[in-house]
Image (cartoon, rainbow, N blue to C red; front, side, top):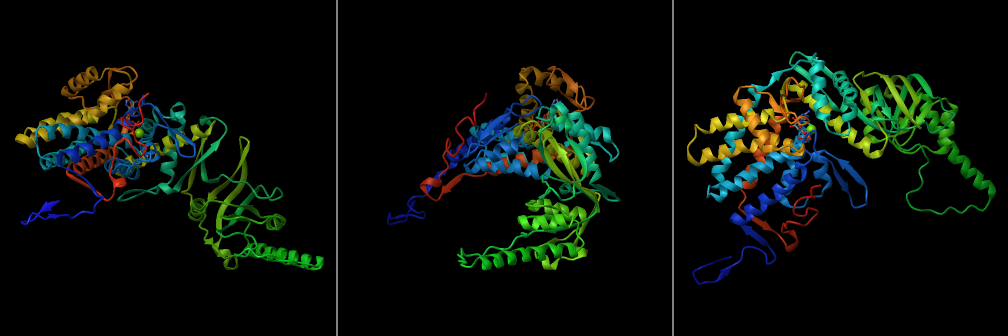
Length: 546
Ligand code: ADP
Ligand code: MG
């Protein structure tokens, strides 16, 4: 609202618009962002706790994974959502380090609040943070060590670090071996580097058995069984039809009632249906297919005909599996059966139904494209396999990130202490308020080792003091051993992470912090649109600590 010279008020916003401005807007936004960070903070590191999330229909997820927690939480506040976005970016770019990114963002905002209280203008803080973030990337790059494609030992350690303290912990040796093998299998080396398509690795969960029974299958494993027990269990030199329409006689779109008075007419009607199905199966057989994977249903009668022709068939194969099969076997996904030709069929050395625990799976092995693998994750309960799968995904993401850039750092808080140290030094070349902002950024980096220590039940002040002293003596990889509480050489102990996990986390945390800081006006288009803390599934204090 403003007024002109006749003292007539002018309204530029609708009646029910809510608006907060200035310090108040900043305070609310920072608070919301900090709450998000506070929520995931307790899960950081090998000694981090898990969260149990229950959705609106009562299904339960038990997880330690930052991005999973935030996605399931249904966060509503706009600036809190911006923090969730960085977890998603981190997940897409690296596949791990989501908690780190969020915790860093929360701490950067917390430190910024202190600066705002000292009347330092947000644009000055933003500038300092940007300079610091750029310098941080430089420092991390300079610290990083090289890794080669052949270095299975280091790659294994990277995969293992990703799984430490997660559901996969107990079998991390086995799983990290599988992860490295899978990633290398789908990579190709060429003169400009290494190209890897993560989609070539399928992760399939199978209940039953222990995590230690997880295995790597060269080819594609489908959580399916043959539709008919007299179909062959194993087909060699398989020619595979990939069909995304139903092998059924289409029921009419509109509910039509057919009244048949004469039993002969009834028979004729059934015969006609049977004939149509027979023709469909004949068409498949004519293409020389010996295996059928169908995305939709397969009619009972058609199943019977397929079995008689000695064709192995599975129905309701997911779209993504059908796409993976297409890539692996070189087959084309066909919608209209009358288009099916021999050249559309995919090829695989063996397709067979195999028993895992009490259940069957269909394995498609020796595919035309040998770069397809399935990591079969086993576990005794639904929650266990789901969490192991998430840990394995993190490990795959880290291994791929390490191979892509061929740069690795040690973890356990070592790089963050080194960053704090280098950025403090860097800040001295700036004057006044900018220097304060860079210093605040430097201090914020220490939230990672501090949280690792806190989550392990250690005294964070003692730990940080010891770590700083070690880094002053130039041992760059000094990190915290969360099991003994002592300072360790994180590199020697094999706590390794891809460089990208750190550079991405620092960059996106700084970006979102700056973005939130620069907001001084929140205008919401209706009373129910106004962000209110404590609503929308995020009570103050996050989800509570336990
Ligand atoms: P994020 O979602 O950020 O990946 P994690 O819960 O996986 O969160 O924790 C990652 C942090 O744990 C990293 O800082 C990493 O260096 C540290 N970490 C992993 N393994 C160890 C270990 N064995 N000892 C100490 N720190 C570790
Ligand atoms: Mg992790």
